[in-house]
Image (cartoon, rainbow, N blue to C red; front, top):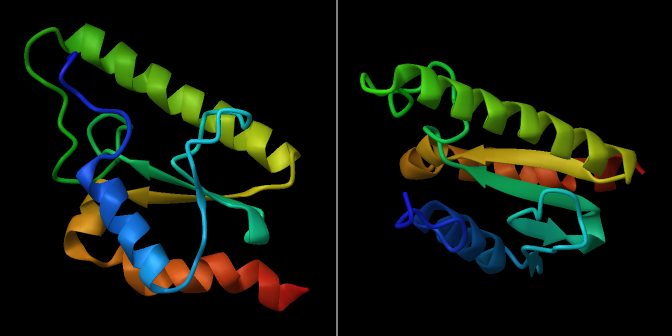
Length: 127
């Protein structure tokens, strides 16, 4: 597991390239915010987490399957990740940030990109 990267993953890089190409400017991995979000859009007061389907337990996804060995350990680990995610999102919401989650499988199918710009700018149009 020491080989698993937490930053600059392929799905994260794809999202960053898309945002930059669409003229969004962002900050990376802001340690001052709860959970150290992958991407922070200060202008829109929005954070984006690019979650791996396996590590964050994406229900109904073909990439999420509990391994058959050490099942209890993996189940506990993934459930811990999910509860940490909920806590981070609540803390960020309390600080006034909107949280957008982009799943690894969405990036692979490029389906996340179609609604990402609308989701980011949604708050701006409501003002």
